[in-house]
Length: 172
Image (cartoon, rainbow, N blue to C red; front, top):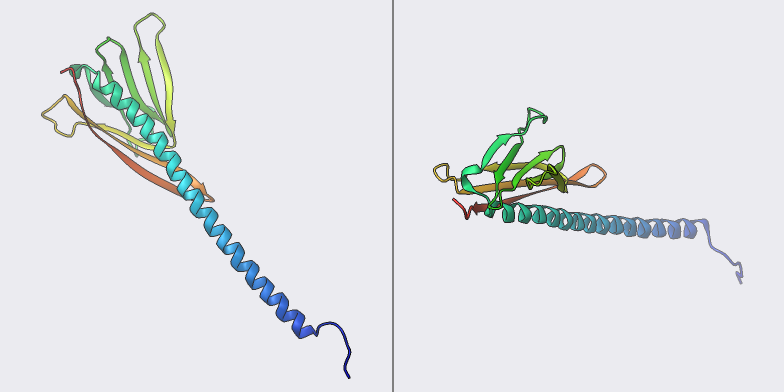
């Protein structure tokens, strides 16, 4: 009668191997789930940021005086990717500027109250903002294109482009 207790070396090695396999699969599934969650939350975050900035621009653009709209290239940026700057005067005679500086979208307002320009950062993580006339024969119609990019994890980035519908200027 064999009454020895314990496990043989082979049984221990098989148990450790199965445990390592299960741990590896669990770690892989956890990392995969974490990356999917991070990608989804980052996409939601940059979508919200870009949508708020775009809504702000559209709201202000609709109150612009069409004859004051001016699209220029913003100086101080890299010549490889020219950024556009939009300036206009609204119906209240406030001067507005929208432009990109590095990875930020800025808005400047001069209410002509003697206090000068007030500058606001609308959002960050901007890769490119571009203002253009979708129909060059109409100066009361302007379009805005925003590309947002944010690092998700490690070196992987999430890029999303929001193209704002053409904005009808209410005050030709």
